[in-house]
Amino acid sequence: MGKVFDAIDDSMADFIRRQQMFFVASAPLSGEGKINLSPKGLDSLRILDGRTVAYADLVGSGIETVAHLQENGRVVLMFCAFEGPPKIVRLHGQGEVIEPSHDDFEQLRSQFPELTGLRCFIRVHCDRISDSCGFGVPLYDYTGQRSQLTDWAKVKGPEALAKYQRENNEKSLDDLPGIGLPTGDHG
Image (cartoon, rainbow, N blue to C red; front, side, top):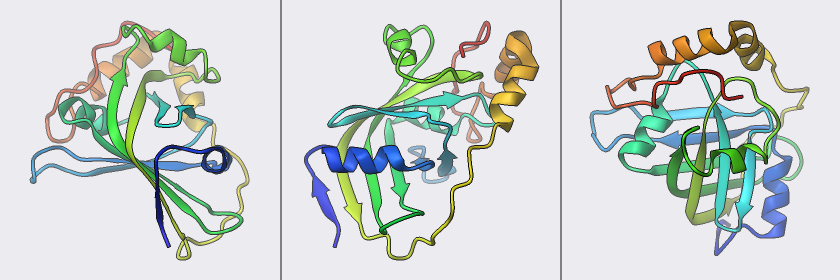
């Protein structure tokens, strides 16, 4: 049976840290808008305190989560045990976009490994922390992280990466504002 927690305790924090992948879901306010669900990996998440987490958001083809958070802040992160005992953890909350110009950007960056192509951080203030059984989640063997995203960002270089971001991350699929226009690489 699932349980709701007041905070991320040590046991849950340990579970979250062991997961090699997590999922982020967000949606615009419009019922006609597109819901977004994205997988994340690459050692990109940190637990900041019992009710706050942050993850590094890398330049990619879309800007949906950022656009949705700037519009309404609603987000959920989900962690599934693909190895070991079955378990799912969900962190519902209000997310905020921490761009390079934000006062907290450098402090957050110091808590993560260097990730080329860093676009911003997403900080989530959790208002519901829960777990459930995960009995329906299949077992998978973890063999490693993919390097293509960070390799691609390194090959592009700071100027081409900033250009790509300006061309591809200015608006969401639903024409919501994306992230500020970059002037260079931040990762």
